[in-house]
Image (cartoon, one colour):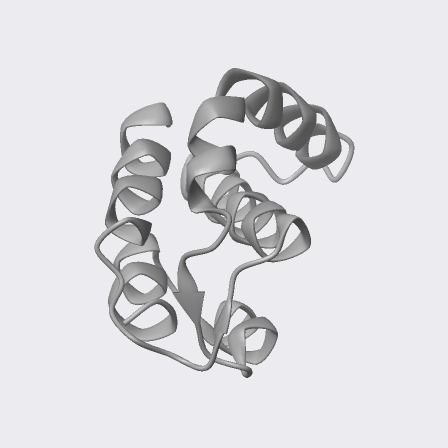
Length: 96
């Protein structure tokens, strides 16, 4: 799981010009969506697991989340995250 999360977070650093700088909430929303996707792909459908993994990975990737702050994102980031079907779509559609 962490390899995909790291890939997506690393790609955040490569994001180009957009409308505003990512906030702490934006970065956390990206991580949370990646965790949801990874758990679903791994076959975990217990809703109780999602918040536990989100908290664990937020602690584990705290440095990456701090580097995410200030990355340029579009104003429609929440809608893009909801529509994304995989981490690559987040990296290439939501963050470019």
